[in-house]
Length: 354
Image (cartoon, rainbow, N blue to C red; front, side, top):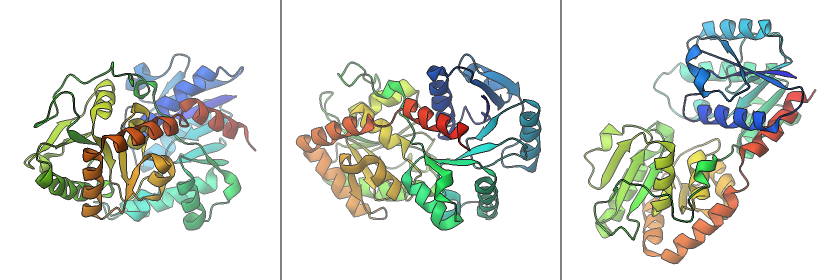
């Protein structure tokens, strides 16, 4: 088969991680006769796996122009199927497979009041046009069936994978060179870690409130925020915001944390929680359905809007080394289920489905 993939977001976080992990695993499969064609600007060439054909095409995201520009390029490429790894499906004559990562745009408040209307229109079009719809969790599958009336037979659940860097170093050899502490000793972890952006559904105000409560009792504990600038929290006592960190540094931060906290109101999958489990870090999440599905009994789950609930979970983990060890062990075992190889296997089968 000749398979096209919209790779314009390959450098992004989230969807970019998905595109990179999936493409790499598809190429490693080495299916005889398969050829992969990536569509995106010239600048993405260095990020594509060896063996992927690159067709240069660029257009503003979330625009009418992208629907036509990407569609024309796909139609000229003589494809058997086109994969849209995001819910924006171009105008193309090709059979389409689309990945729907979540329905957050339909559920959570956004800065642009027109964004939910655009998202609903594009999602409705995507699920109607697509031959197969891929989701990253059973939670999102249920939401698609309930809210967009999608035929369950069209949906294939293809959970995300965890990159190999997060599975290495659990023997203690991979450690961060930075000091993310306001007290304590090198031998004992003294910080909680959050990894993600600062969008409203990530629920950062509740985490900050919870941390302030913990710090009143455990003043030597810190909270490290990575993944964005987090300017509004720079003045909060005990909060350290190093911004974006390299993936190797992130893996080391996961491993040395008291716990990784994922307080989101909603997720489609919850990749930071999966990465943290793979690293052997204790995990605390909200009770958002996808996070509970992902982590199972390998995490403590807290009602998403309860600052005191998160504070109590953080206190428990900070004070109980046996609990940390138990959660870490369960997490490593559970994270082993989530591989890009498995994601690629399920996705490749969907490409050939009729």
